[in-house]
Structure formats: C-alpha cells, structure tokens
Length: 551
Image (cartoon, rainbow, N blue to C red; front, side, top):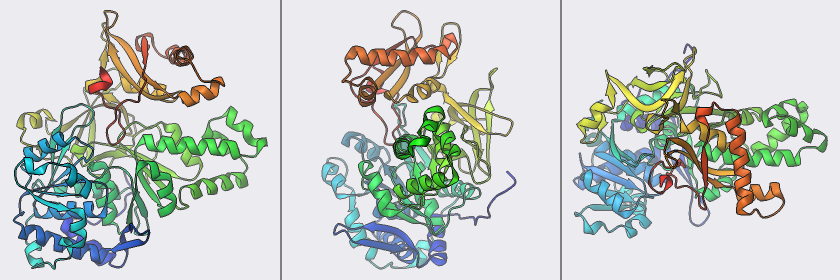
C-alpha cells in the first residue's frame, strides 16, 4: 500500500491519555445522558485527571501488578476502569452476559484481586462465596474514587510498561465452546490502532455510538481506544432495542457494527425507499438490485433519497466499520449508492483484533480487504482453489494463551500465527474468507464443504431468520443439513395468510432447491430442519456452533 496517513507512535495507554489531553484538551471525550435526561460532557483534560486519580487509588488499594476485572454495560466508567486497570495491573474484561458460574470460574482462573462492575452485576454475583476481593461499583468509581486527588503523578508515570508485558487478559469463548485466555500487551493493541489509522481517517470532529459489548477486543480497540487517540467523542447505546432512537439522538458520524446489525438497518432502509419512491420509478427496484436501482434514478431524486436516509441515521453518518462475521457485498453496495462508506475488515481477538480491511486507499466490497500496514498475511498450503489456512505476522499478534504453553505452541507455525480460518487471496492481496478450518464438512469422497458459504446463500432469503449448516449422518453417510429458523412474518406476507407447517416447509424447500440447482452436486443441502426458536448467539450476534444449536 503506497498511500498512508501519518500517525504518531504510542507505546502505552498512559501516553495516549496524556497526548489526547494535550491535543484535544477542551474537546468532548464522552457525551453521556444522565438519569434526569440532561447531558454530561467529559472533556479530554478531565479524562486525564480522572485516569491519574483512579490509577493512584488502585495503587493505594494494593492493586499494582494485580489482576483487575471489569464487568458491565458499556459506559464511560467501564472505559475509565479499563484504562486505569491496564496501567496499574492487568485488566480482565469479562462478558456481563455470562452465567454467574462462568464469571466466577474466570475470576478464579486469573486470580483476580479486584472487580470493577456496575451495580446490577455486583448485586447478582455471589462474590463473597469465593475469595475476598476488592469490589468497586462504577457509580463509586465515577463519584468517588476517580475524584480522590492523585498522590503523585510521577508514581504513575514511573510504572514501566514494556512491549512484552501482558496488560490485558481476555477470555474468549467465541463460537467453539472452549474458552481460552488471550494475553495482550498495550503494545499489541496500540500497534493495531496505529496500523488502522494509517489507512482510515478518523477525525477529532467524529462522534461514535458504542453499540457492541466493550469486553470484545473489536469494540474496545476500534471504537474506544482508537477513538480516544484521535480526540473523537464517544456516546453509548441504551440497548439493542434502542439503537435507532440513540442514532437519531447522538447523530454519530461513525458506527462500528457487526453484519447482523447492518443487515437489519439495510433491510429497513431498502423497504422504506422502495415504498416511498415516486411511483414511476418503482419498477426499477423490481428489475434491479437496490444499489443498481438507486444509481439509475435521476440525480435530484437520488440526492433527496440519500438525504432522507442520512437523516434517519442522525444526519451525520459517513462511515460504517464492519467486522466479526461475513458480510454480503450487496449491503456494502446499497450504502455506497446512498453516499455512506462501509469498510469491512477481518480479525481475531488474538490479533488485537484487526488483520485486514478495506480502507480509504483500497476498496473491494466483495472481500474483507487487504492486510493493514505492518501486518503480513499468507495462505498456508493452499488447495487447487487457492484455499488454505490464513497465517499472520505483526506487532499486534498476542503474546500467547494464558497459562497454556501447549495451546500457544499450536497457535504458531514457524513464527506465523495460525488463525484457524480458511481463505484465499487474489492478485491484489485481497482476502476472501471461506470458513473455519474446524467447521469444514468432509464428504466420503474427500470433497470439502464450507458451511459458511451455504449459510450466506440461505441467509440472503428474507424467509430465513437464522440458519446453521452442519454435517449430518442420519442416513448412514456424511451429508449437509440446514437447521433453519423461519421468518414467519415474511412467509405470511408472501402467502397472504398465516402459514401452516406445510406452507413453511414448502417455502423453505423451494429455497433449498433453488440453491442446490446453482451448486455442484457434492455441495447440495440434503435435508433441513425447521426450528421453532431462534438459534443461540454470542454477544456479537454470531450463531454459536456448539451446545443446543448442534444437537
């Protein structure tokens, strides 16, 4: 990549906080709605002071070099606790949606000495049943601990944070069911941020709405630490049910999302545009894809539609950053037609997380982009289709798995990190993800079938709400089976009446027949199961490939 933005190198969160306070002192770091409906602004200079105060308080509580868990809803207090905990000791972000038992297991495994959490988490957890720990509520962190004057800033500045110091420990259950502790340094995370900023322009005037859970590296790195490094403003979503309302309320210019959320937004926009478009142009949307139809509209009509769509997104949205799962290129093209950029990327927690992405200098809606600066990617032992395991190298790659030398050794091959994902690269270096190596279905004749490819095809039909493709041996040989949760409302609308079980099966059967006709015989979906409830998902809306979903 020949074109890049100039980016200052940062070596620690402390340096980031200080630099942002100097450069963006009076700008708003966090815009928060209080319980009384009024808004509160945390300026960058205030963030710096509270950061030093909280670091000093943690040290006074004997937490230097200790493991400090952060659990709770996305909030300014979560972010502040994370930064201070990682600077004084090792921060352990934990998914608030986990069961009490799982949370306790992680706390014990990491020998956590203190917990920063919101009130609801503290009230539901039986912490006293384990070892005694210091408990800090987010409310107390905001109103008390971060207001106690720092004893000596030089004490904080004197904490050595080397390149290879583990400062962030993340337990990832992912979609495989087996949790591992990923050990990251501040250098890992800041290297990833620096590489991203070299190719994606984030401005101090930008506003973002934090929607995805902060305990995920994707959200924490790209929609928190990265934004703070550029003097941008962060607001927080009340809940997934209030995303639309919050977008209008905070008018974000940038949204970091997962494909499932963008697909939902795209669906609503497409439906609204088709319904409200002048009648003489409606035929275009019947004959062409949404993006193509918009492109064929007169310039004035196109501008009016684009303006109304942007208004529904708060009026200022210019960029969607998308990752964590496969994204249909048609959705990228839909937003592009409306003047909104969608940059899809690829990464893993172990890589801090971003490895490849589309950017201001490279754009290919059908791929997950090219390797970001300072990251190397290669395909290991590609087959005749060019598909093999994706390997990666770079300063953003994790230190290893927590207290698991065997797993760490297995994760690397000749110095390259083994992602466990399958993909191919074209002549431009653009990466195409084809699936997880563990998910591949191998037929009796040795053919490889990637479930994600079939799932993507099935998910394009509005009649299908959720789908998981699995291997089946119900008839004595390995076959492909689709577990489908149907969208009854769509089927009902198409039929004109409430569908019976037979109607649902006929509708899904036709879809599968249509897909099979376009696929090689060995990839055919041989049977399917109609589910009566949605498939279980992770907090980033990925469908789990374990537990009840595969029974």
